[in-house]
Image (cartoon, rainbow, N blue to C red; front, side):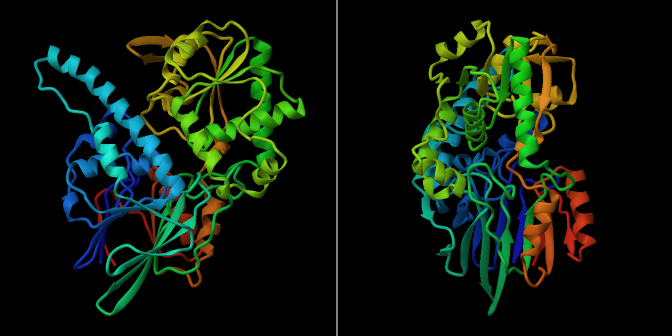
Length: 462
């Protein structure tokens, strides 16, 4: 059996594994590469395999770096089944449809430049028709259900606690009268998630592929994170400016709304208007509202008491482009939550373009910033950034609360690994920037886990 790392090896994005036996081939995830131009160019490179050869794809969850190239896979011949939870299927459709629209706009802009330079036009990565074709291939599965993927490959999905419907996968492969268990962590959530249930352990596996986004970092306690969020909101209000929050539209936006509603109820922040300026986040919130079965006990209790965790007085959904543009003319304190989380696309780019040079304003990062993205450079401390063709002075206050991340820190990742009894024969460390993966390798090595940090496109024989 051979597993090839087709993405997210010593980088965070582009998750994709190929699992090949003598007779069968499947994929685990097929996500978009995100970052600078060189990284994003990888999305347009041909697959280094034939999509038609694969019988199935297992999707761990609906974030773009895990599902974003599935329509491209279908565009180039994949016709296998796609296995995912119901919430993952619904959220993936929203994410991929949005990606198709962004790709069309980006390519249209790029082709104007290419025409000026006498270069041939570029085609979008995929279109909405490709997304619709991909959706027809989805098969819904439940947690802890034994699922037949192919004749000799079976899978069981476990709650990863990362976002709504996210899964870790245990795969059983039967080959040459031998059974091998391989587990893929997907993205592991924090031990105390704001909305979803805690991570469900997997207790048996011969080999494990584990993420390492925060392989060398610890998150503060939830109470400390909430205190920081309250401080940022109050200080922004006192300055009389806007608090702009770039947010991932799935899970993070909903977590922010829940926290702000809680703060308002406790009267520890002012009665400041809050604008959710992301059509995709609005659609995702509708999915959240339909799937209470994924909620933790705290949110379930709120619902039982008649409280909507994603609605409160002063929350305004800006559905249209004109409503979004009107926010530029607000001259009083407000909170604007807009996608995307890394400032590489979406309405947040326009809010930053119109507000980052104003020292009254605050830009708050609440998620991981992939190297090379606009969010990465601003968070790093750049004093000038080029945005929508214009160089801007960064005069707004820049704040960051990393502990809002949906990813486990290194202690939580270690705890996830400790659930395997006995220890796996080998642990493969993926989905992390190189220094994070290598640091995590050292940490778990000291605990007796034999491990290895593969590189992109490396082939591993098990």
